[in-house]
Image 1 (cartoon, rainbow, N blue to C red):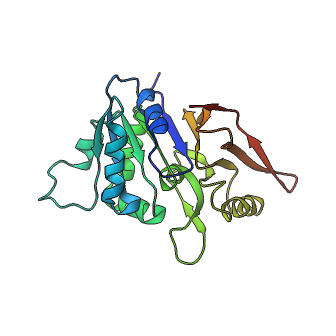
Image 2: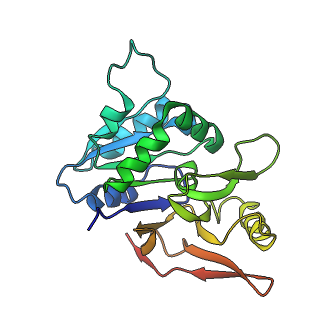
Length: 231
């Protein structure tokens, strides 16, 4: 039996104590090494600070993988850092730029190896979209467009399902037209825990927030709301 592959994704890129605590506990470690990857935000320092602030209330050891560095400022390689981790959370921002940087630096391959050996992966917004085959992003000028992900789960994904008014109708349109495969959508305060690419549990921070499986049937969009547990 190989390692259990776990992914925990949610709609918003904001750090919340319940979601990060959930990820930390999924690692099965008493005090897991927990890494934040803020590439999509350009390694935004306020975003990094908020991660440390949340982790201060968790039983976890926080780390940050920065890409805006040089050999002089960071001697540890990306592989050496990722190899130490028990859980990795990816932040929101520009999905397209993030994936391009990861590919150039080989970070995408390191994340795949870590996922395959059982490191808990996850995130919100760009940090949720990146794990799927494709979805819509605001990473390009003017309008939402389709971006391809790393395909850890071979379904499409839509974050911010309830908070950005253009997201939901555009997601429906793309699925109906075949531009996107069927897939999973999350409201900002809703999350899905996958184990070995299958839904294990849906959770939410309030009763108004939901996650969905969205697909086309006989030329119509179907939304299957996932039963969520409040955390």
